[in-house]
Image (cartoon, rainbow, N blue to C red; front, side):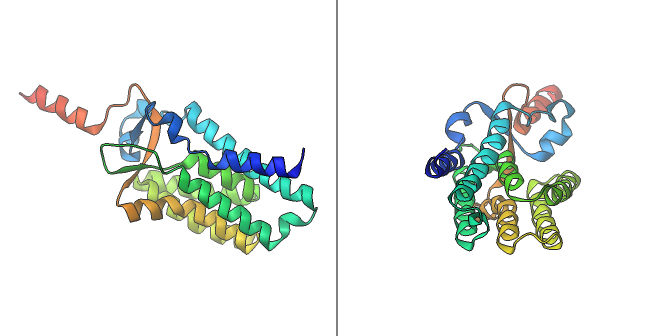
Length: 213
């Protein structure tokens, strides 16, 4: 396939904001809400997140392939790393917009982020850094805390395994970017979960008040 066609396809996959398709079809829930209700814990495993992970991985892989098609050593050039970094960061930022919520919330595009990082990092770094972030998020019941620890883990492990500085820096930034954006906008990071059984905290409070009357 033509390298330019590979590049354009990869950019389109990475920059399309999934919120345009799913914002009215999914619920939003904090990690605390999900952990407190066992039957909701698999709500994050839905087709939209699977597609986000797959398209992010495919998009970044297509970009890498496009540069490799131009020249075998192109993927190692600084300009290539810079283009990949700009495209990945821009694509991730675009996933934050077009979401609507009545509360001060911002969906964390975790599946999309994991797809990007999986395509960019060596498997051993990814598979060691990810559990650190997951464990921290579950322990503190805070998505931002988990992403922050994953950021540190990626930076340290990437350096130890000899990953290029710009790749390590880019993937670390991708983990930390949702934390930075949510802090800047003063919004809570939440997860997109399947619409249906999940009931927000306010609904439970209303039910408790009615039962007490």
